[in-house]
Amino acid sequence: MRQPTTSIWDWPRDTGDEPVDVPRYLTALKRSWLLMALIVVLMTVTVLLLSLALPKTYQATARILMEDQAGVLQAADADSVTRRLATVQTLLTTRDVLTHAAESLPDESVQTLEDKVEASVDQNANIVDVVATDGDPDGAAAIANAVARSFLTLEQTQERERIARARADLEAALDRLRGTPGSEDVQQATQQRLSDLSVSEASAGSELQLAQAALPPSEPDSPRPVRNTVFAFFAAAFVAVLAALALDQLAPRLSGPRELSRLTGVPVLAALPSRRRRRKAQTEEAYQALQASLLQLPATKKLVLVTSASASEEKSEVTLRLAESLARDGSRTLLVSADMRRPRIEQLLGLGHAPGLADVLHSLGEQGGAAGSELLRESVVRVSSHLHVLPAGSPGSSSVHLLAGKPLAALFDGLERSDYRFVLVDGSPLLGVVEGPLLARCAEEALVVCRIDRMTPAAAAELGEVLERLQVPVLGLVAIGARGDASYSVGVPRRDLEASPSTAEVS
Image (cartoon, rainbow, N blue to C red; front, top):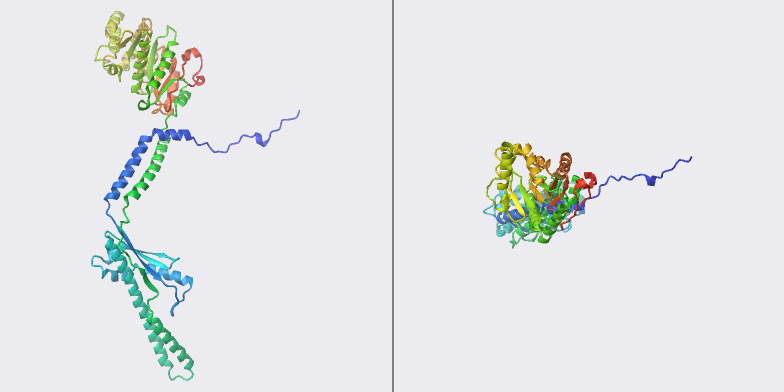
């Protein structure tokens, strides 16, 4: 039998290049916009203030021209001109030149001029620039002109001294040749060189000329607040982008509800933007979706725990808003404030300190069911005809002891047999505290509120593991802080789906 053949085109290709996750980077930038704005504002304002506070400095430039001409003592080829320009640039800032210039500048010395004067060469034009910097525009021009003129004067003096020494040497040689037989030709050549030196002496120093005297500048060279501020703005924007992307790498956040659902294995029933970006229509539609999910529960399923991954103030607001929505539609609802560490329901409703859940649990544990039932009826606060509230009460020293005992299970069993259509329990978070899992083990269904704009992928994965370990039936997730328009998916309890967390449908 012939064996099947494979082609190199069938081999898997692994280029080693991962695609750039542009949406994630854009989300990271949007998430960190406040940090980026703070960096840009601080850096830009700081540079602006420093530019305004720093003392002003002025620059003036005197220009020296070197004429391209041949002399008696030097050639005029290109290499010689280049070397000559470099020599002039170096000699302009020597101590001899600065000492001579300082004599005409009453407020300057060699030491101060060394910090204020620099020279540069424009070889294409055979020009040497003498640049002087000073806190006064007239002072900068005076320094540049004094240094340039001092250099030209010294150069002219030295050139004449060189010619004078050459003349003396030629005259001495001519004296030795006189009277020497057969030296007439040499004497004639020496005499010609003496004549050439006389011509050169007349034009000594004309090779270097002051082409342009320095004028007082009309505006300072530094600082320049406008230019510096513009540069600082763009530099700060670049730094801010790098900081936002680095923060996303160090502390990544969820990209959206879909990633939250994928990591937890639980469908997202409602997704809302952050509070400052939320619209009324979005909120109403989200709670309609949550209400529809609860109404699909059978009549025997009435006790729903509303919890969160971590501490979130909006968890209690979601619980209260959902309870009010159910009560308005005629469903008799009891709202239990069971987050004893951070009770928020009482604050949101404006209820004072009164006996509540903790006191009922104490009574059930110490005095029995009759006393506990009586205290429960006395502790329930009627908010409206269909909405009642059981406050958190006073847990005392240990809320864990209250929630871990049998009284909690007995209370929940009694509430399940009550004539309330729904019992919403505002519970503690599932991650980081003990009270949340203790409440979850007694709940019939759970609804988990997550702040995805503050939640890391690791926390989402941990939340999924906790829900699976507790084996609590989860209706779904409420994603707070989603970007863009809110998305909804009306689902049924996960228990009825008979699907594992990995196969749950993503809303």
